Image (cartoon, rainbow, N blue to C red):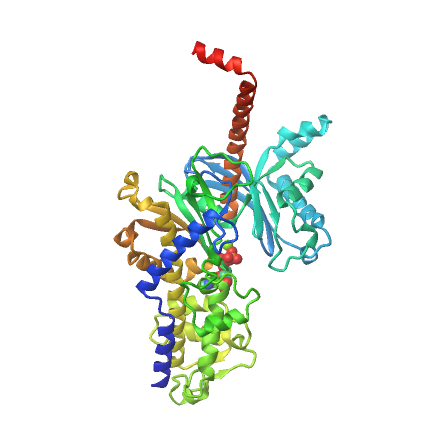
Length: 526
Ligand code: ADP
Ligand code: MG
């Protein structure tokens, strides 16, 4: 039958073979290394200034805020020190007019006010006490050490980070447009407004959501060695992992504590292989590319993440429907349509709208093992406005969707495999036979049935991993922007102390240098 043959031909084009996986892993490792050496490469490998991950014993009360899209979240997190935490949070929609405000100050003043409301509502005692103390101190410097809450600030827009709590906005995305903020330090913008309200809060850390995921997983995971990678497979895809400082060859602008010998690196792997050395490209990938707002960029992400998979599926489905040699979602099929009615695609169907098909239907298709594919056919009607779809058509749709999802999972495995190999943890004699922990977040990995098992299957055929894939534990982790951000604030707090120690010793050294005789005397008496 023509439909079956055509479907198979399409499925074959999304095949990403074991050899393809292995070639891609090697290229991923090469691009990782390149990104550690210089700027302007396809994998940005951004140093985060976070030099340690938590082990679950951390304690204390921290705050976290998350600005990343439609909502602003404020929360406080009590780290209990036994891999667990308690949190309290408020969520408020960002008023549309503030997303396009004239000045950054207007938006950040709103955020500060929400922080104040949160403190009054949930931490009123601390708050009142603090305000009373502030009333009695007149000099602004007197306020400095009074900051009670350290806060992690998850800011999900492109930022050039230059310190643990310092980063300048490169550009707005997701419907925000406040030109005045571009190029400014977003932590300073927030701190200024917090200070105007005399709130007992210090913006201690600027947090990327992948780093938050890594930290949150490290804290909550039962693995005593913590996690090595935090990865997101949601709207977009990205990962942050622990790298040896000695491998980080490009210079670092800001200060950091180097005593751990490690630093968390934000790979920005969505742009892996923008040059298409190894990424697979079908004609539908090309079509998506032409219709995208950033042609040539985020090439890996466009084959892997939720924002794009639905669009690939839409483009394939539409083409197959328009193929004159095939009957697919057409009324010719009604003769054997077990529903006894005519298949019609509504003129308003999301199938006809670029970016109209949500990736969630792929999860529905994958999950449906009913002999009549009832759930999928219902979803085709309800979500895609394809009325009375025949069983054969739904089956073809399911097979195509599976092919796209499977390719995405195998590509996801490429990034995970490369990071695992790069860290050398599987061969670490101290970790012999132990689990290597990875935290993942995002709707795709959370809801697409079998996404994680397809990743593991691909890891098993990866040279350098093989059967050790069974030791790689991929755990779901939510709340990277809550507990993860709080943890980074706690790391930042400990760094503040370390940095001042380093400075103190540095100062001693320069004093000693200035007085050579003192050094000699000291050496002699030792
Ligand atoms: P974000 O990445 O913005 O934090 P999510 O992790 O929820 O948010 O990811 C949202 C993306 O996941 C969207 O692109 C959406 O199409 C896709 N998505 C939502 N639900 C599902 C699902 N059930 N299965 C697969 N993809 C989904
Ligand atoms: Mg998310």
